[in-house]
Image (tube, rainbow, N blue to C red; front, top):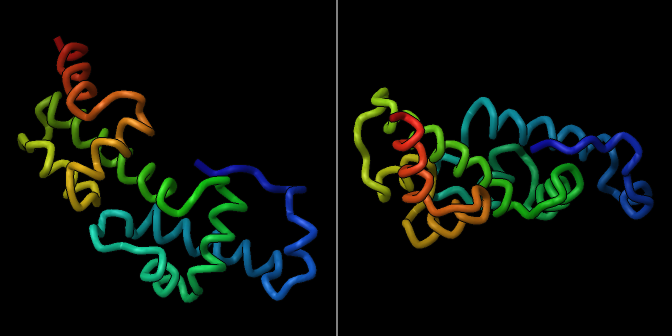
Length: 141
């Protein structure tokens, strides 16, 4: 999910108050919040609450995400949430996770509802959560 940016720092950002140093520092704080703290599991997470959590503001966070990941805040968070959902669905299929319905998988992955979960899952994985679950069950046999 992380994109190399060695020589990509834009001219626009170089001269601004939002320096390269700040951007790299925010990226590091963001990665800790995502990878270690798993903040994306919070169904009430917003760009504002995440920015506050990493001691920044929504504009700087948004710019950092666009710069390093070349995607929006929503797409980045949804990718992490879908990754968690696929982990749960695989574990359900192989019997290491208690059976959960799709709404429970959605909530456990950080989504508020299946109406946001299903399209986000399909966007990332190319199939619906139900189709993915079926495929996992077929590969188990």
